[in-house]
Amino acid sequence: MTASVPVIRVERASKAFPLPEGGRFDAVRDVSLDILPGEIFGLVGRSGAGKSTLLRLMNLLEKPDSGSISVAGQELTALGARELREARRRIGMIYQHFNLLANATVFENVAFPLRIHGAMNAPRLRARVTECLELVGLLDKAGSYPARLSVGQKQRVAIARALASYPTVLLCDEPTSALDPDTTRSVLDTLRDINARLGVTIVIVSHELQALGSLCQRAAVVEDGRIAELFDLRDHREPRKTSLGRELLYHATEAHAAEAHAAAVHAGLPPGELHA
Ligand SMILES: Nc1ncnc2c1ncn2[C@@H]1O[C@H](COP(=O)(O)OP(=O)(O)OP(=O)(O)O)[C@@H](O)[C@H]1O
Image (cartoon, rainbow, N blue to C red; front, side):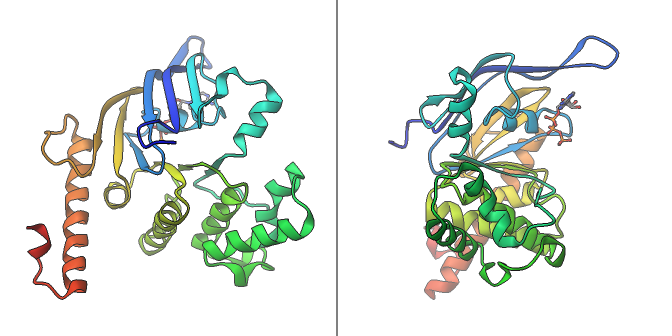
């Protein structure tokens, strides 16, 4: 797949929910969006703007009322139930509250999606679970139960579980909202590391603009179910249209300056030299 072919394509997708008192609420309105292979893409917006619904359209956890969704060249909206189950194995997802099985060990939580699918024999399954736990730095916790883990460790188990089926794409719905700032940083470092090492495309919904500023290459601001603007976080020339866009750009600029400073220090150069 070349860099210009999107790994996720959302085309003119809309999603409305019925309101209890009658009528409907348009959560996503005629959105078209391309996510490129290997990128980390952020979705930001005020509460209720439609970010999570848009994210859940990408693996058809929410079915669009109109429009189409394609992932890795396969139009999910055209698939039957069995084909969709198969296609979803390539789309990992993590959530704010981890959704781990409380009565299963860390190893069994990560093994769970592989066992459901039943495509791996026992030695391969063991090797894959071990590999995923190593990736998130939790191999020593394989025999522990979730109740014994810190919240950051729980989210890393969820990441390992999402990676078990070799996904092309990882969808992250507010993955750090339940975490303190230090743990947030370490979970985001894990996501960054996975993206760099495995090339997994990441789409992340978050309210934490500072974290997204350093993590994402591109981001979209969602307002009233529409994309109000979409931009590259390294492009500082275009003025941003929305206040969230300006705030995100501010954090991205700060993060990039800090990265350049750290690189200069690491290289033994006077800070600023790398800007030249
Ligand atoms: N299953 C559902 N049934 C009815 N309404 C829903 C459902 N899911 C979402 N909504 C409504 O759709 C709107 C958009 O919700 P969504 O969760 O996508 O927003 P969000 O931008 O992710 O918000 P937040 O940041 O608060 O999570 C909200 O008004 C929400 O109440």
